[in-house]
Length: 595
Image (cartoon, rainbow, N blue to C red; front, side, top):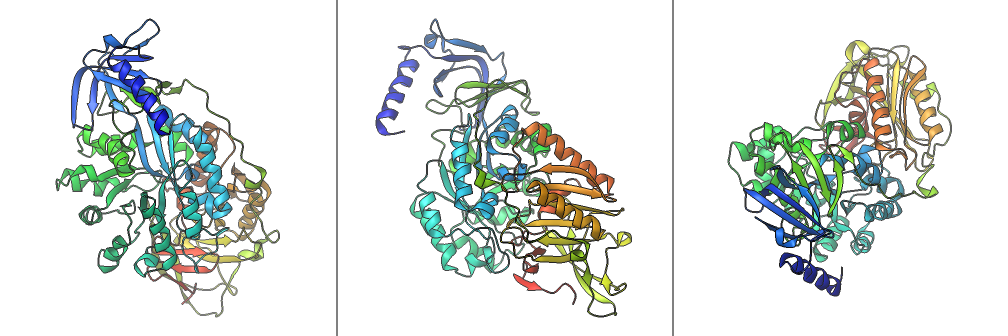
């Protein structure tokens, strides 16, 4: 909006506030949750003109004309639309449009997204697709420029590369809010010129630099990372992580997605230690479609924070005004006040956040959990598809781990940690059998394979993982494999693993499960091998089928498909697998499978 358009808008809003012109809509008789003043004000009316709020006060009768629509709040709470300060659309395995379909009925009216998943497959072309799709949504969708593609140069090979010039160009695009999470934290504190140039471009543009310090070390490296310029962080898991970050001037983003549950400990910095809650933000980071559709979005996280002892208005601040101020958009969103977008929730019970009515940009968009509007259509171009490029069809022999000796070996094993993005670096003694190291269900040891899928190198890297609990001959696979998004397969049977690879190659990417030689679940993800082109509710149903498939294989993890997708994330400790081999993320170096 240029100055002339803004001047016209504000004059129109003033005319309504003064009673010279009628409002389009007036919400009458609600309890105003004023996050900006930290109070709840009774008997309040809100007058709306177009997309924005013109008046908030005890009586908006003077703004009502013959054509004004009246909505009776019936003493319900008037809550600002909820904002998710950090999320990855691709983690839902659905498009931006379908994320909006899933989250809008739950009260989300704004999201800050980092599309570094699609960037790792399609580069800046993929980022631009996400920006274009975001532009016409009925809610606010701000996009961060991915900062680390690949996330750890030298330790993995992505499908594309993004550098300072790309960041500088993208920062000029409408809808770009800042720089996405700076995941290569060793590169930052080591003074990597490339990374610091990206952050400098963001600083010069006056936009926010997203953080990602995935280490428990709060010593000198932590201080060095913060000195580099990151302004927020969602990788803390402990009380001391939250305290250290907020003391050093960062915004603490407390994450609660489908699999990573980091609010419980960090919220204690507010509820027990009494730290200033205005520097804490609730986020989801990674949530699959089933969670978004069936359980909720940021509303679910707000309710959880309240259940842990956070005052309701404080928890709501953490998902409204706090992220809005952090990203510099509080003059538009994050509070119910004149001039702001009319993003308003009518809520019956504040503690349970029972959302009945959702206004977004001045339009009634959802009622009683159902959308009341149509969503814009967006078609991804053909270049976004057919991204699974294998050198050849794989067979069972590709998944054999040959032993160099007949003696017992000490094997480096990835240990899955329930509810955490981090893994353990386990060292387990294994005895070769007929010249091979084999999966062992009695010790919960499955094979893990990473198959390169961007450049047809034919690379298949093998290792072991513990924690999935498989009890049958089976294999599970995914082309959602953070961050480079190659093909990841975990299994207890080599033939089943080969079958998974073939299925994923056939459908152009997705997630699938093979049990005893039979494909029992499939979620097709043709867009970059990351996202479905189907509706959110359909993807949610297929996701539930996948989770049921994991259970039939013996797995009892809460979100095993998301745990699977992180086995290759070489920027979060402790042990991962990439197309280069096993990566010790504590030391940021490649290590052998067998010591």
